[in-house]
Length: 195
Image 1 (cartoon, rainbow, N blue to C red):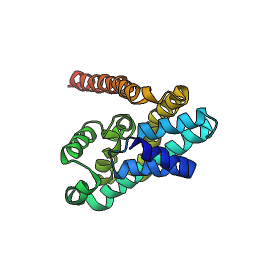
Image 2: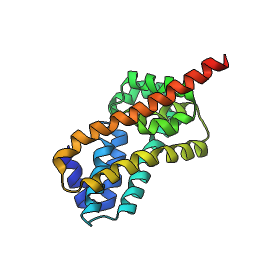
Image 3: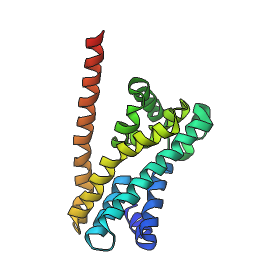
Image 4: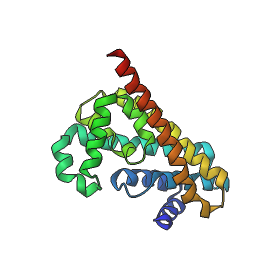
């Protein structure tokens, strides 16, 4: 998989990176963090520009979210249950994103973009609920900025040290998940205090 991503970016440059991000939305097994970090590594070598790499990664990330939003908007839950398996969408993952959306509303479009698996599927319940596209786009873009920047910068600072990439990406996921858990607990605590 790593070689495929490298080959795609190497052959098509920024377009290859953008296509890789779209494939991440359709085939969830392709990790966006690896695509973004690869772009960052190429920026550190002078092949790419850092800002353009970040921008392409952000656009690709948002574009993926838009595709999934419209799948939910026009297809609804029935479509997802019937055809989701062809896009590697597990029903339990869809249920998880539904419950997140029901608890936290449109904020999940922002915060959910920073949680593995959830980040890809969170647009579904928002599309199914037919939330305003403009609002969805604003929240999704804002929420996609930290994830995109962290992994592009990570690749940029990592440079040629490919052997550390996979281990370090796994380590970076833990603090992000912890921050989200703290946020969720604080929201629940506030709700309990109100009652």
